[in-house]
Image (cartoon, rainbow, N blue to C red; front, side, top):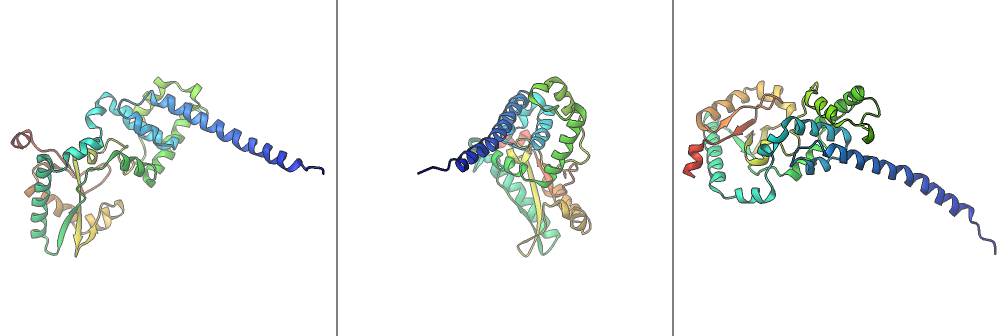
Length: 263
């Protein structure tokens, strides 16, 4: 009985054609990662390796390169550090000041209150959001296009990268519009150094941490001014709000050394 080998042979050849390019692409991506990792100041390399998209990776690397060695003082806490903060005097002081701000705000604005997501933002969560956020995606497209314009379409080929030139270019690159997220590891939310205050009404978010509500709700209804008034009256360790990007709900938190000493 004759066996028909034509179809299996054709399928095998097709598989080779499909696997070959994909394997080559994976090898190129790994080689590019290895080169870019040499530019990432510790400890940012771990986060950079978990950003698969080249544009998003470049956008994050820009922030890391601009911080340089000082990045270690800004870097988000580890899981162990977050766990140690839970229930600590430092966390109790933060929660007490948030409560004081909320009490002032509720008294000044009957029917409204403040909601705060009080947990420290883990590095895992930051990376996940960075890899899917739309504003980061827009910034990624911009920086990737600008990089190709500066270095050529093959400028990010691993063998063609001049790491010194690329680092200088990243430090000096200015995006047309800043992404709504800090690069993973750099947000103060990752070390209990920032709080987002959202306005609630009847238990529901009324003025939230949304860029779409900055003009239509926060400014149009004066919630930016009302929140700032309560911060100034009852939250001495808070400064803000954040202006770039424009987030009237975001306030940095830095207790004085004297407060830390009392703890």
